[in-house]
Amino acid sequence: MGLTLAACAQSDGPTPAEVRRDARAADVLILELAPDVIAALGTPKPPEGFVGFSSRSFVPGAIQPGDVIAVRVFEPSEDGVLSVVNSTALDLGEFVVSPAGTVMIPFVGHIRVAGNSVSAAQNTITQRLRENAIEPQAAVNIQVSPKSAFTVQGNVPQGGLFPLSARGERVLDAVAMAGGTQADPESTIVTVMRGSRSGRQIYAKLLSDPVQNIPLQPGDTVIVGGGGAKFIADGALNSTGEFDFVEGELSLSQAVAKAGGLQSARANPGAVFLFRRQPPGEFFRYRERSGTERNIYGDVIFRADFDSPTERLTAQQFFLRDGDVLYVGNAALANFSKYFQIFNTPPEVPAPSLP
Image (cartoon, rainbow, N blue to C red; front, top):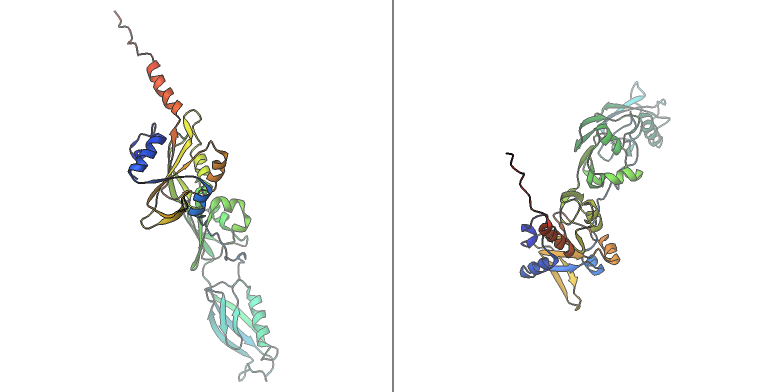
């Protein structure tokens, strides 16, 4: 960003005046945190969760997508349309259950069988055949079935392949079976991949919202990982460094709290800065006080006054992005106290030499 912050030691950092001076020199806009700024930036989209995923639990022995089923039909009446010479049974063939869970069977048509037991599929086929046959009976057998298991990968101690049971394992069960995760639930993402579909959810929301803890199906892959975004905290905060988070889920207020809060004896609450570097070509449209609208490209600095209750509330609606830098300046009195302590520190007296 080319501002003083990049070159300053963590213990000192630039003063608010130096931030403004260097921003003007680098032609970087400083925006005071306000509702119009929040409106210009828009609301980030949180992880979509597992909307559209089936909530039906796995049933051992049920027909699954990818299974190969054999269908045989019996018709006691010799006058039936399915009767053949010297036999009242007819093999309709073997059919692969589609990813959508359906099969196309002669004399029956297109039916859904995935998730149903063999007996339920037999009943469905029998009911369809009664439209053309006399007292038909269908027999269904699973000829080939993929292994009923799921995979757990990512930030877990013991990833691998795990069997599905009659218990009906869910996403949180999968994480637990793989040894759990020691990462912060608020900055951990759990992804479920099912065929061509995938969904992502924050681990903390899985823990608090039972609806998100969906049942697993054979072939599912559960991936546990970091939130995919990081911010740097520096200056008069109780904890500085690099922090993981989920983009679209961490407000400025939460970021300050994640960094341990403002140092009570050192921080200037009116000098909470957020440095942001927008990717080339990206911009947001901002209306200035004069009424003029302009597109804001490149680097931008946001300033919040945490002495103001209104701006503290606004900070809860301002969300961080990957690569943001949070910096809190020192209070003027803190700088004075630091130098005062230096001049009032008694000089070290060398130990008397022994005779």
